[in-house]
Image (cartoon, rainbow, N blue to C red; front, side, top):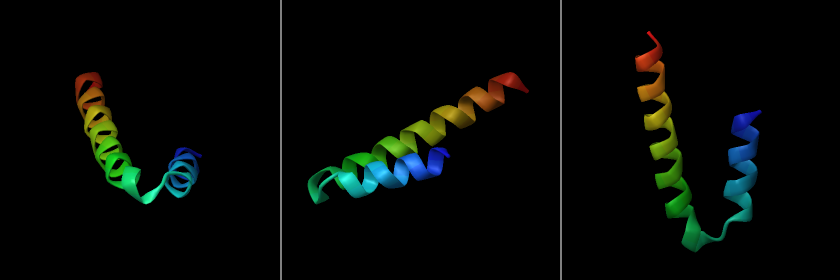
Length: 40
């Protein structure tokens, strides 16, 4: 479900904000990994 949400956001965003979306996605995944590490 989350992937579809990101894809929709990616399509809606213009070319100028695509770079920002990619950076945001990377940041979010990094944060998620950190949280997962803390749980284990």
